[in-house]
Image 1 (cartoon, helix red, strand yellow):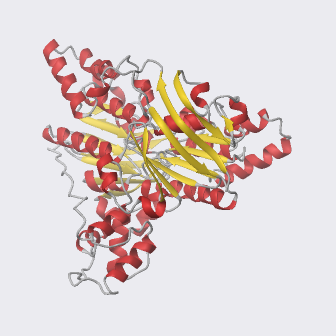
Image 2 (cartoon, one colour; image 1 turned 90 degrees about the horizontal axis):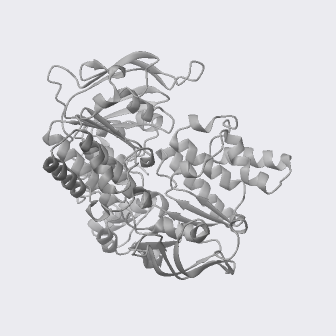
Amino acid sequence: MSQNIAIESLSFTYAGRSEPTLRKINARVNSGDFVLLLGPTGCGKSTLLRSINGLIPHTSGGLISGRVRINEANVAEQPLSATSKQVGFLFQNPEDQLFSVVVEDEVAFGLENLAMPPDEVNRRIDAALTQVGLSGFRGRMIASLSSGQKQRIALASLLTMQPQILLLDEPTSYLDSKGASNLLELVRQLNETAGTTVIIAGHQVDEVAPLCNRVWLMHSGEIVSDLPKDRAFQRLDQFRQLGIAAPALAQIAEENGLADRPLTLEDALYCFRRDTGGMQPPFITKVENRTAADEMRNGPCSNIPDEYPTGRGSNFNGNPLIDVQNLTFRYHRASPVVLMRISFQVGRGETIAIMGENGCGKTTLLMLMIGLLTPSEGRVILDGRDAVRYKPQQLAGLAGLAFQNPDLLLQAATVSDEVAFGPKNLKLTSQNLVDRLENTLQMFNLKNLRSQTPYALSQGQRQRTAVAAVFSLHPQLLLLDEPTTGQDRYHLQKLMSVLNDAMAKRNRTVIFSTHDAHLTLKYANRVLLLDRGELIFDGSPETAFADPDCVERASLMPPLGMQLGYALNSGKAA
C-alpha cells in the first residue's frame, strides 16, 4: 500500500513564541487510512493539520524544520493551489472558511477556479449539498444559517473538489447529534468506497473511534502514541493522564472487569452477555416507569461512577429572574419564524440546558433573553424589566453572554487584558481589580496564558478566555452558547464545575445551549427542548432522555452508557 502522507521530523514555532507548537513529529499515513487524532486542548492538533495541507508555512509566519510530503511532494515547496487539489481541510470554526454571501457561490468557488464546465459545477453542487443534508439551500444567505449549517456548507465546498485526502478539525463540534452522525457516516462512506484518506482531530471520541483504523495521541506538540485501533484503547490510563476522553463503552467495560474494550453498542452488549454467561446480574429488578438514567445507575453498569447527580433546584422567591411570555421571533418580516409562541420562567440559582437540532433557535433564544434581539411578538421580562429596555452598559453585572464563536468577543492584546476589561469598566479599586483578575485566571486555568494574545491560542483556550471575560463581571445570569467547542473533557468539566460552584454560592443562574448529553445530565437541573422553533419539553434531563419522542424530535443522543444500561435491563438489542 502506497504512502500518501509522510511527516518527517516536523517542528514548528509560531512567530513571537519561544516554545515550539510541534516538536519533531514523525508519522506515516497510508492511502485509505482513517486516523483519529486526539489530545488535550492546545497540544498542537490544529497546527499539525495545517502543516499537512500547506497553510503552514505558506500562510503562517514562524520557524519550521522537517517536512511533510504528500505523494512524495514537499508541501512547503509546492504552491498551495497544487496541494488544495489533493487535500481538503475543514476548519474547526466554519466562520474562518466561508467568505461568499450565497450558499451556491461558496460551494462552487473551488470548481470555478479550476475552470470546470458549468453543467459539471451544477451537478457537483447539487450532489454535495445532498450529501450534507442541505439540498434546498442553494439560494440561502450564509449569514442566515446556524453554525452547524455553516459547518456543513464548508464540508460541501470541500466535497465538490473530490479530494484524495480529507482533514477534519473538530468537524462535529457545531453539529447536533443527528447532524454529527450523518456527517460521520458520509466520511465513513468516502473512506470505504472512494478510498479517501481521512484524519479527524477532535474530542468526540465515542463517535469517531468505531470508524478509524489508527489512533494518534498528542501531548505538548508530540505524537506520544501511534497505534492501530485494536490496540489503542486496550489501556485507558494514558487517556486519563492526558485529561482527554476515552471511549465511554471501553471505560465501562474496564470498570466492570471485562477483558475487551468495545466501541459500539452491539459489541458492548455481546461482551456483557458473554462475560456474564448470558445472565443478568442478580441485583437487576424491574421497576415501573424507571428512567433510562436510573437503568444506567442501578443496572449492569452500576460500577460506573455517578456521572449524573441531581442538579441545583430553582429559587423563584416570588419573582422569576426571567419570564418569557408568548415569545415569537423572525429576523425579517418576510423570513420564516425562528421561535414560535414560547413561554417559560427561570428562577435564580437554576442551571438550565437548551437543546435541539441545528437551526432550531437556541442561539436566538439566548440573545432574546438579554435584549440583544427584539421579539416579533410577546416579550421577555429580565429581572422585572422588559429585556429590550436595557442599555448594554446596564447589563454589566446583571447578564453576560459567551458566544459559540469566541472570536466575536475577544478584542484585547493579552488574555489578562481581556479578562480585566469588564471589571475595569466597573470602576473597582486597584486591589479589588487585581484580586478579581487573579481569581478568574486561576478559576479558568489561564494563568500560564495570561501574556498570550488571545488570537494566538487554540479554539478551546480562546473559548475559556471568552467565558472568563464574561464571568469576571460576576453577572446574575450567565449565558453560554455551546461551551463545549474546542474543549477536551478535562477542561470542559473543570469549566462547568467551576462555573456551577461559583454561581451556586451566589444563588445565580446559568443557562447553556449544547448538543452534549453528558453536559446536560451532569450539570443541568432542567432542560428546554426546541423543535423547529417550538418549545416541546421543559423538565428534568433524565425524563427528556428517557422519552423516545423527545429524543427524536430534538435530535438528542443519550450517552452510550445510558443506552447500554437500558438495553441490558430491557433485554432489547441496542
